[in-house]
Structures are given as C-alpha cells and as structure tokens.
Image (cartoon, rainbow, N blue to C red; front, side, top):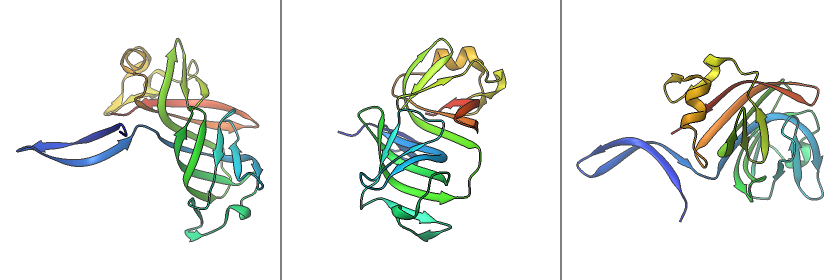
Length: 177
C-alpha cells in the first residue's frame, strides 16, 4: 500500500527503474539544535517543530564509521534519511554526523503551497526571498510562477538554505517527479 514515484524507461511491458522515491521519504541536513538521549529524539536548527526519532535500527555513522546515537552533540552537523510519521515527526533510518556548516536542506512530500510559502514535514518555508532562477524543476530553473502552478500536494519537494543563528535564509526550492 506504499505510494511511490518511479522514474525509468518502459520497454515491452517491463519498467527499468532509474529512480524510486517513496512518498513518505524525508531527507534533511542541518546542525543539531537539541538532543534528548532518554527519548532518543533530536531537533535540527532551522527546522522548528520537526522531531526526529532514532531507534536501535537507525544506522548512525561518523566520518564513514559506525557510531552511536549517544556520541551526537548539539551543534554537530547531520544528514538524515527518515520516514515521515504523522506529518511532522520523522523516524530516522540513517544518520550521518559531520563537521558543522550553515547548510540546511529539507526534502519531503509537499504538504501545502500557499502564496509564497510551502510546507514540508510541518516546517513552513518562506520563498519570497528565493531568486527567480532558484525555483527548480526536474530539468533546471522553472521560475516562481511555474513552480507554484506545477507543485502538487504529496509530490516530493525540497528547499535549501543557510543557517544564521536559528534563522534560515532559503536560497532555492524545487520539485521532483
């Protein structure tokens, strides 16, 4: 019953998949904002309201080596692959720890797109400061107007920005599929 997007070539009734995207797939990257070792949850700076749960099945890596959730600290930069649960919670499947950077990335099924705001995984992203040529489709820039005309609820979308304190300046957004 899982909803997926599949990109590939169909020949003689056989689909050769080049890319499979699960509808509930969630990818994010930022510095750890808070961590609760007891409940095994963390939040990321610049992505307010999104709680990330880590369990025994979550693969944790640091510099290419297997690590432990208990080794993660506030301020560490992490890249997380997760499954979206209840719209604004994430169950992490993979967590990679790296040196802190100001980069913030969020990719998730689009929850809404109204005026200049999109919502991904419960996080509202204000796009009014995003340059026209940084609204991106599958094959390159599509512009603000086309982006908001083409974007569909449930379709994979992403946003990238730079963190300053706890505020993200979003610099590009895009749709997939």
